[in-house]
Length: 201
Image 1 (tube, helix red, strand yellow):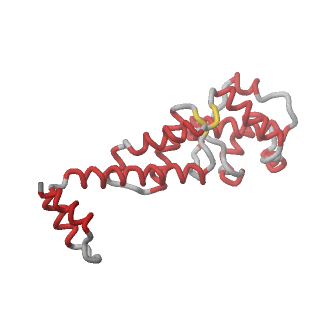
Image 2: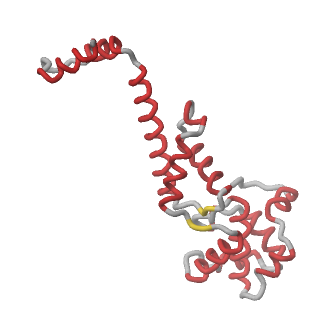
């Protein structure tokens, strides 16, 4: 998330509807603000922040202004407690999201291997952003950053293995023999000689 925001950008990204104001009402001020910040940030980026420090102060201040709560109340919100977990669950239900399952991650990994960007760019950060966008579009809450990182790296490995195998299968027999001759090994045994002979048939 960007760190600097104009007033117009804040209004567009984090402006609240009447229904949202009614939904977050009726709780103590620091819980009200924590719930509202998590709701609007989740709407914006499709995932909850890992820690409150990830949220730009301007975003917290603008949201606090809309619910008429002092911005300092956000510092008293227990980010890891049972109340926060209950808030996250309520937000998922309200927005129609579910937590990523093993099947979701497997589908995401396969989807990444098929993306055109794989053919020329294996930048992990860029691929993770692409994965976040995909999960957001499917209303799936992403896994932890470490788990998503493993999924992205697995997709890169799968893409490379498929690419190398397709190249290998496309090489003619004489090219395979030429490549094999470049590898210095022990004298070939009977099985290896039989394999090379089969390539010439």
